[in-house]
Length: 633
Ligand code: ADP
Figure 1 (cartoon, rainbow, N blue to C red):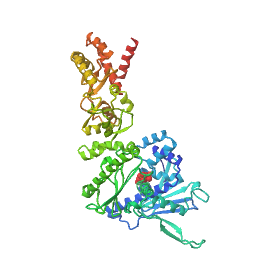
Figure 2 (cartoon, helix red, strand yellow):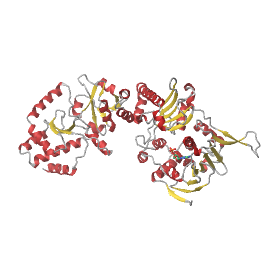
Figure 3 (spheres, rainbow, N blue to C red):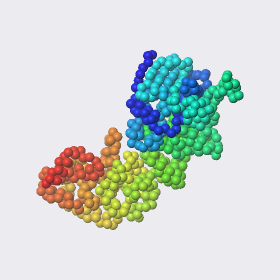
Figure 4 (cartoon, rainbow, N blue to C red):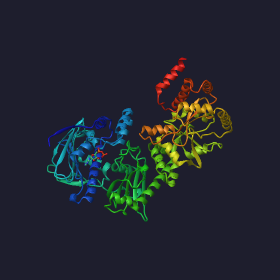
């Protein structure tokens, strides 16, 4: 195979620049990242050999780290699964995660400190090699294939591929260190075995395969030192130790190593159960949501162990999809060692363990909400959406819904702060029988709704539904504490106080005598609205839109923008009979329902009602012309 020069995929290149040039305070983490890739490759080989007897390997799995002070290199080798040429291009030349673009956009807008945190969340893995290396060589041979491939890059945008030389399967990565990372007198000498030993113990102690290095036997002669190979990591599974013996730092390090986490997790769950189903679970909620958490390519799931032996990664059958942000592992002696994914799905043990874990997580979240509101709100900002998706997904599971609804937070019109539903209900005045809510793109858009004016005047509070999933979730719940959710933009929204009821009765009286007018306005607008009617819910506003059964207009638009036209709002145009525009409409109507002046007025009112909801009318140019005419008259 001739040497080929290939370009990194554009986004990979940008990310690489950022990794290498961003202010990394922690230069050491490259070793952890590469060791954890090696450990993954060993896992993959083990799993493959369970089902494919052809590749049963007699080699003991291991990771070998070999520094070379003279050559200024470190070599990290594994006898894992290896990669084919195509896999090298796909895995090392590309970062095909969705959300990469969003991530890079966010990164560009953030400050240096925030940028570092963001890079951490993204997990740059292999590319961290370029933090310390000016050139990286990777030689890999996929199990079951005869040839190896060599990948070389200086991280500057191009990489070379050529035929490699390797006797057996696995991957060897050689880092040609930058001068500041080797030799005497530098802050970090990554060619020093003892320095590397310290790093491995610190970051990779729980890796479940031996990480070996060659050391001089102490006391051997300086000229011809005897050498010995030692395993540096303890490999002892943390979760088998008693909880009381484990420090928070040990847990944090464990999740960083095992779950490719960058920062200490926000919450940790260490659950041991005995009885009919025996298991230990060690789970965490990462501090930040993965950028692609809500994309279909997000690979959720827990690691599965049986009697401390790793069986399977990304096992999705334990936790429901809405808990996809939880990471960790389950170790259970009740599960057979070479269980297939299909069998696992049907396994009662998995179902029982999964349900128990879900209950445990919900309980711990409830406790956090009660005992540490600030921490819960931090959690909510990252994962609140998942809980609301949970409400929606648990459509037929009232138990889960019941647990989830007490964990929901919404911002409200009271002070824009988060409120639980219980807190909202607690504050409701006696005369209010329903939970008022409104859907909008954000709080400001809801505050601008003309319907909000009376709400404010009466000192009432509205829950803001600003996330696409909010309206779906409240529709599924229907009630909280026996109080219905009532959208203030729904046609059946009424205020119960005496003053509001009085105004409503007056408006109903006027409406009786304006049936012709309302019918003709509807005719002039056409099928865009189902009905035109008078309203008592506006004060200084002239028009607004209401919806009947079904989604709100904003929800329709939100879902349409996601290419999901499933939701269609049924609109009602509402007119304020106490507004000067209404008198004008009546005058124009009296002059003739087919006159252009009346018809233009009707369509303009509809367009204005759309605009107040923040929705663009279908023909904005037409509206502009009409308003320009009016202004010049
Ligand atoms: P991540 O590990 O988060 O997927 P990386 O950038 O670290 O991201 O690695 C990208 C991919 O390259 C891995 O998912 C894996 O498929 C492949 N890879 C990296 N290192 C090795 C290795 N030592 N052996 C086999 N495959 C590897």
